[in-house]
Figure (cartoon, rainbow, N blue to C red):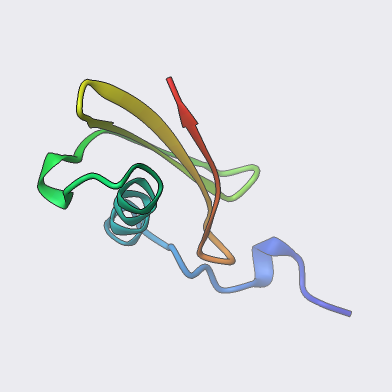
Length: 79
């Protein structure tokens, strides 16, 4: 039996760890330079244990959703 999310150690415990992963996801998906990607807003969902990072680049904006326990990007949505 595996422990619940509350008992597992998070791989993305702070905003400092979440932002670089979000930026790398945007760089990989949209093939943009790292210096063009700007952080607009970050939010942590306590209930789901997910990070949401809003990024701006090349006149576009995207929200990157990440699982803080697994340390992976679960969704990138352009807005």
